[in-house]
Image 1: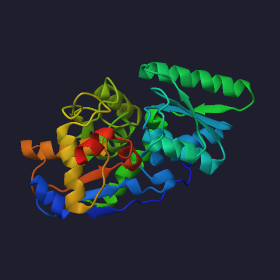
Image 2: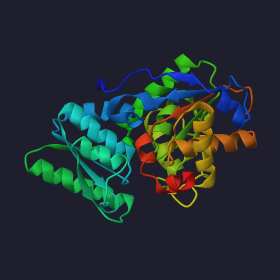
Image 3: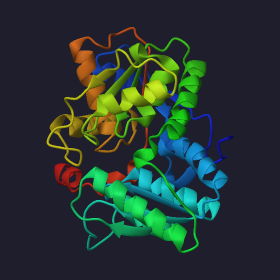
Length: 311
């Protein structure tokens, strides 16, 4: 099954010498893989997964996509954009309650024409169940629906990051460390399957209760070797939607050394994890390191914590 042409590929890698020095690396050590520039819907890593998932949906005759996420889900926003591009209906089952004013990703969800189902304060498993029920209802009413997995992270979706790993090798052949945020696990799993566990440093964002197990299972199902996955879990703070001080500092550092905008949930945590890894000696000067910018800019505009920090 061929992936759909939904992305601008390959994404560039850019040198980040000022950021490298600020982190304690040599100026030529650090490169940024710009997966925030994937094109569709404002860009971001989920586009790579949706190329494969939407191809599967169309192959199965779907007329609608249904997926889940947090209120400011980048995955939900990009699923909405993919649906608009392909002429498919989209329903987003989101945790929480409808806000008085739509901001950030929610504004874009509406712009792309997605319908939002607010599920209240529920567990991730309950969100998936609500989505499954909506798939059944839509299909019964005459619109065959396809349930896009949480974060796009199934074996099908993760193949997009096996391809991304091959891109990185082609662009930065001597890469020693690839640093990436870990949410639902598919992005990190694809990179581990392509590059090996020893080269990928994943930084947990607190999106799932068992990030290591979830990622390892995907790696194994992709035909990779999951033993030895490098995972930092010390940047979650008080939870997925919170803004730990180290993450806020990382956002400011990237913006003020390279003019690169990160988001407070994913890439901010990933950079904070890289800073901690350099401090501890897990990533060392002289090692070529690629930081995967997975996007998420719209979520920045939905962060009250960051707005308060910058006020």
